[in-house]
Image 1 (cartoon, helix red, strand yellow):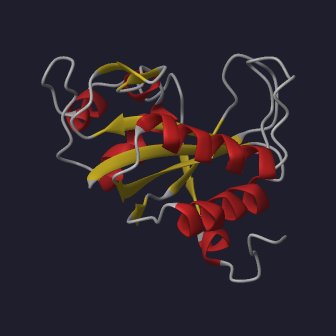
Image 2 (spheres, one colour):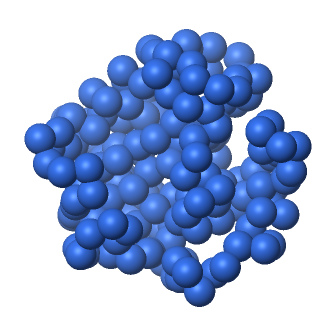
Image 3 (spheres, rainbow, N blue to C red):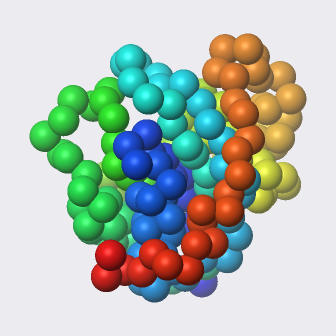
Length: 172
């Protein structure tokens, strides 16, 4: 078993699809830790603000198998794969970091470059893994956050009560 960190994001029916995606992930892989939820402006296009958070899971699944599960969860949540890269999302789940993996693994760059580039990934990641190091240069992600230009991508923490709503099931 190894720890894997995932980033969740949505700007379309945010609360519903993030909660549903988390339910599906718990059923199929399990979830250890969930970060606070943050609101941020869309990046690369004009659109509704996103809600983002990170989770950690312990799994023995290969990256390609986990990637397939995440894609299926996104599809179950109505992900439109024909939409432009920078556009609204019902649900986006990214593999950010896999313990013991660096470089391209099964078509996934690890750690994902967005970890260090985007506040809405970096902040929730360090919330759940403050001692995690960037294997590319040995720096702590928390130190990257301490020097990050927070005015570049302002974040607002929002209530995460919607994630614990027991009304949402995998059958919804």
